[in-house]
Image (cartoon, rainbow, N blue to C red; front, side, top):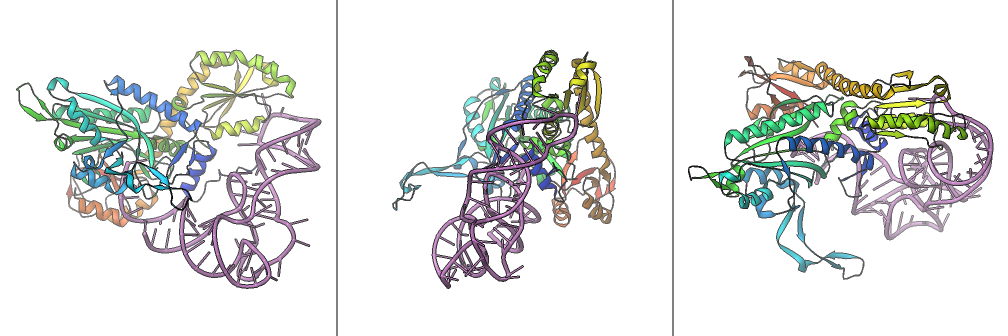
Length: 490
RNA sequence: CGGGAUAUAGCGUAGUCCGGUUAUCGCGCCUGCUUUGGGAGCAGGAGGGCGCCAGUUCGAAUCUGGCUAUCCCGACCA
């Protein structure tokens, strides 16, 4: 059968959407801009959640849950915050429907208008800080290190599966601290957690840095971020951590009594990653054969496909393979044994490649005779026939190798599309090729916006590890002390 | 909200310019037999009235008007 999507479309986004659909991850919902995450896709998200949650707990955080609805007045308490989100809010104005007068259905009951409209949270800073006000009186109540797993709604003009949906799942951490230093350190620490997760669980290399003032979160003093590079040369913001200063504490009157018996405003951070990470995962590793998943996040780590001459042989193969499955499970691996008779082996091979299963084992009559099996790794599609003896140990090592290889491959790719650019001519031609451009920038928002206007490139971040280096702004020629990271982004 | 495009079976599509028997083909689905080491073969079968509304006409998937939805490009954004 002809492969019907894998010839990479001219249009990368078409390829991506096809890939998502074919890999059984998600589909568009009947609700505009919303996404149905299918069981296989959700299984990946659950693995991400679990890993992240463990990392949050290990850094002393606890989970809580806050309301979906935010009174309109709360949102407007912090000026920058409301300005940033006002244009994309879903608003609840009524609480009841009634039969329409002409009998053709139901209409909103005009009698049932809310006194104050409710906003479906686009993020929870406001509702949480209105709550923290009640939780905090003295320095003894600090710090508060809370996280919530939730859904949020941002009414985006244009949506895209996993990368920008109207409703999305995420976690948002909201912490409260007694000192500026402690809050800043917290924001930086959580960014490290995200970078660690991206690289060691997702095999997605990221660049850590700070956003330019223009790209800052609405209401933040500083926004730290991790930036990833997708295979089509576009950058993707994969996670953010904000140092909020005392902005929200002031907006919601959250003060604490310090050791000197004086009232002080609380210092805040917030940080979040979303189902967008799944978009990053897909766009970083996938190839024309389908999804490629890092072993640590793959819902199925090993797929075993028995091959037999006829139906009656299957019980014999089942018996032969049962101990192998057992050994693999003993190692804590997730194994899918697919002995369905209605699909042929070739079909199954393709199916598990679509789904990104890291390792596939095939065992047939020939192997039964020889005591062997065929092991195929998804990242390189390399096939090796080897003894069944010790297969569990081998697979365990292979999975680790694949996990590392994916990161290495992605990092090599990123290196190959990252270059230093020093002139405006070069910038305009190089940006067309995609990738990261490391350039000097004069530090002004005017220049940044002008560059965006002319080239669609934005400053992804000012990398933490950018060395001090004298140079001239790639656009204005004004002096600069370090290079910043430019790219076209999702 | 501006520019462009599309809407025919569960999915992907032909037909639309130039109206005319029973709306095309592929995948998938159902039945049977043969198959099973890279998406099996053959035979038979089920399923749609062409996004919605109105109009023109003896006759509309096809022409006209309106509406809706989706996709792409902008503006906006994690």
